[in-house]
Length: 441
Ligand code: ATP
Ligand code: MG
Image (cartoon, rainbow, N blue to C red):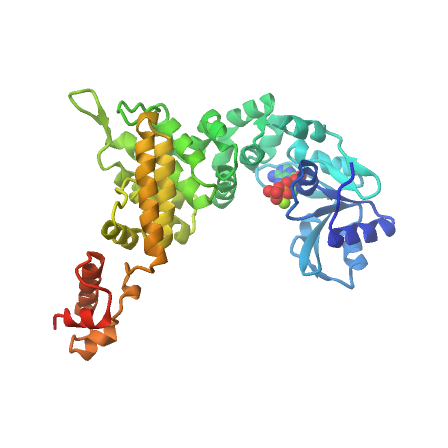
């Protein structure tokens, strides 16, 4: 099988091979190319030692930050390409960092240290695919399988447990049985992994097309990294709107939002507060009053634990907070909704509502989708009209009010907000003269 390698990495491979070193494209790029996906970067592995790579590319721009791991980054055509010397990794006494990196002479040893068979293939421009571990067969069958003994491989590096989930979700693959079993058995290893790395893998996993069934089958791993999620497992909801327990509903909702980190994380957390807010009425119907408030507390705790950046965290918490906010059914409600959610946030919120509805009892679905569709129309119309729903849209500014004698200070802000309120409520057009006439000095 012939793989088309773009000019820049092809040129690097050529130069290494012409200098009598062995050099291959390796890992993710080979996997993706065989799947018919355009690789996002081309990693190269070579028998050349780092100093030899440096001297061979002394006429190029290089970055040496990865040098102690044997990696030289060569910049060609504005893009960096990593060239890594064949290596193994020593023992992993902390389950995270290899104690030593040892350079080796054979490609096979280098491939043997890699995590999964589908990631352990190399490609030589003249000799084609090198596949010692059955990677091609697993690609065809849609299987993520550890290279070697899964228990050992996860004990060397616990992060591989989440990497396995991420690759399975991305490609819609399943876990090979022993690999899957070892993931469950070694889940405590995740406790020792840096939160940033866990979060990066979790986000990659959640945006994968095949995330749903994996969230069900590997929910114990989710509870290991985010303990508050466990309360949702098998938590029944006897309520005519629901047909699933809280976790199944959550999983289904995750599957039904578009695959962005914000939306997938929002759905993962949106009902996390339900178990703490449960009550059953005299008719035997379950209620979860005010659960969104509890959900944001738990979501914040979990996002802090994951060291989520503030911007994404605030966006998620806002969506979780208002995931049950009734959707606008007229323009006035539309402006109120836009004020609360922001323009971008309002459209994200529609996706949240849609996914939430899709994960509930089918009997009410057409009705719910109808309302969501109406809300969408209203919001689209307000957007097209550039409707006023924020202080920045108001036809008067603070200095206009000051010119009328309103003193600077908090009173000025209150007055502007009052005017905005009038416009949003449809009691005053967003026009300068009309607004100035309503100013209270
Ligand atoms: P992506 O498309 O997500 O970048 P990738 O396969 O390129 O996928 P990387 O994390 O970029 O994944 O790693 C490049 C290669 O290095 C992998 O294909 C795999 O062969 C190897 N690798 C990366 N991380 C590990 C690890 N923790 N343990 C073993 N091998 C690993
Ligand atoms: Mg990569």
